[in-house]
Image 1 (cartoon, helix red, strand yellow):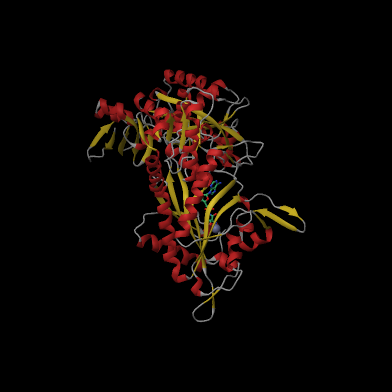
Image 2 (image 1 turned 60 degrees about the vertical axis):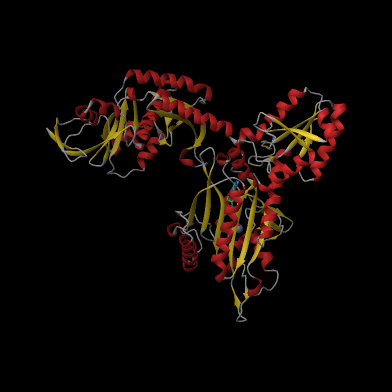
Length: 639
Ligand code: TSB
Ligand code: ZN
């Protein structure tokens, strides 16, 4: 017999070799049903793993977060087993649990397509019926290598393990997997699951290695939970900016035009232009000076800045032209340094805040590209602020406040702040530790003083300095870097920037890099998902569409309304197509236009409009002038 200590402090005697399942069952039948695995002396034990010595135990019940992870991890094994049955040549990479699901990376000769998933799922259900025990076995390295000799990816992982590492193999039916474990003990416990999608994934995330097929799935403890989750996924799909962007004709991507190089369509351009006007005005109010610099720069420029040494992976390859080598710029900072340096500066001139809507190009792995969210040509709401040291805090703070305001004007919310610091161990950054320490300490101090919570991200700094990254959570539940404030002592050195101080001596300014509301591309992806394509009036590509009931009788009045609205800086159109009125009204709704106007006799006679607001049932008739004031106020208030 062995003594098992329970979390309440009591101990109980059990047969040697009892399992977490056995213990749960002995305590209460209901508990057995709820238990998924256990911590035995703090170590994760499968539901069916024998306990051979005295121990303390903490059962993991279904209500705990890690229970779902254990279930999903077990489901990944189930998936692999089913795939191996259907595709006998399959070899396997890794198959972990992830948030709300699992995946497995698999290599097969025959490509696995989305249509194949139901067949695989059916095979998984068969295995569940078979009620296979998921048995754990400890092996040494030599044995592990022998067991997986047919699985090159597993062999690679085993070879990298320490010689004395405890290696475990899990076997269920005819299938075995290399795995650290934490399983539900028997395939019969995996009841409510679904395979979701298949995508390409490089082995070890390395684009120079094999491309495997990653099958995603999700597993839950109840049918209800599964259905709820599938409902959320459906909702997310409807919000997917790639889908909305196409339906609403915001942007397009075309492989012939180039991967990751989006084309902005008329509706997208209208929103982008509105945003640009908004940023321009906001920045002018806050003392920014707008400039425009080229998308191309000499390699020498980027050698001076350090981008060539530290950021080359993120750049397109250089091109030779006349006697020079040029690069597509990945960032605008070097140009802004040159603009600062064009004349002598005095301490009285600072701070100088150069702002630019910067088009730039970056190399992003093709697998990382995603709609507008991550692209290869992007246009950033950028700024570089040149300041004296005594101005750093107030400048960083006012940059941050402006970011806050812009995010709130757009109807978005900050999820959290990241403070990205260097990682000395990486050694990739500028060697001047004193400058780095000072820059990092300053940002920390500022966030602390302002009582702004933040997460420290070691190793995530830019090569030229630490940064504050503002994270926004999308409606698709992804966290994305939206805005950034970066403190830089390095580029001023590299470009030998100076100003003449009060003392008549030369001093070095600091540079604050600031991204206000990300790039138009990323921002648009977030806005589309946030609003499900139904933009608030101030941002809507088409704010008003005037539809005459009868072209001849009401067309001229509709046209005059349209012209009047355009003169008032509103984005208005008319629909004069030879289509049925009902069709036109419905289309204005599917295009999510905030105001559709139906113009008939009554309107012509009274110089009025009858409007219907997007998403509302009732119509209102008001004098034209009232309509104009109302909508203008709405735009002004950014409601
Ligand atoms: C703020 N030199 C600074 C600038 O002065 C800079 O470029 N910083 S950055 O590298 O962090 O990029 C600024 C912002 O661009 C990021 O915060 C992010 O919101 C956006 N961004 C970065 N890469 C991409 C991409 N591939 N696609 C779309 N947007 C991107
Ligand atoms: Zn910059």
